[in-house]
Image 1 (cartoon, rainbow, N blue to C red):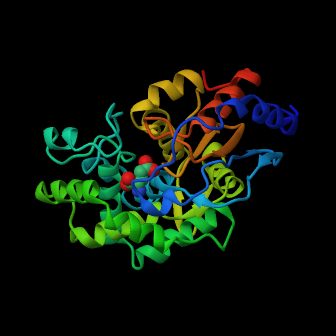
Image 2: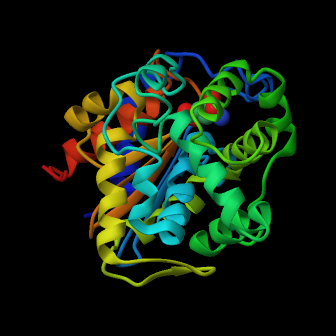
Length: 304
Ligand code: GLU
């Protein structure tokens, strides 16, 4: 498979969508990003790579960070984790409060905001230096030491983070989080603010694509079954209330973020990351979704 040629032709095919959608502006710092950018990087488990456009530009990974947090929480807590958070798709928006109220403070899954806020709480309780430890893990799994938080993005999100604060309050009311609300929110926003490029993300997610390889990064270890199960949760819950659409059109486990990034894996084949800041109404990158749909259409391969 000539991935380079394929990515170049995919890029040409998605150009008509270049002005569709709007970048996230509920986080003021993200509204400053030039929305007219696109990058894509694919990394096979055999070491082949291909890329187009701004594959080396770093962007705010936002909710993609929830996969890293889940890997850490599973490594630390094992199946105990599932007492605090579920693993069913939500069918609701990523920041919905309604379901959380009805289900008495137990988030549906680790990838809705409520679930990720619970994971932030768990990491705060169990790690010696959570901010440094999270970064150490992300750097180790991606093999890139210069990856960092963007404090401006984290602060900007906190300033307007009324909904996430409401979620954290509801969780605290139900006793699902142990630490004080402000520390949990700060750490949650910080994890979301990590900046990575498509190249770095696709390399990091090879660890999930190739579950037969030993998963052991900066002290975070997972069994092959745990990695496969994280992939299952990416498949069912990785795209907010558009997980069904993503399975239908793309057919790969993955995770998106409101920074416009999407990472997807084809188990035992490849890991691919795309980025373009303009989002559809569900918060997923318009060009990114289209590019991945074309990838599995042209290669005639998905997990289905
Ligand atoms: N930091 C964002 C929020 O909590 C993450 C949302 C996302 O990327 O889905 O709203």
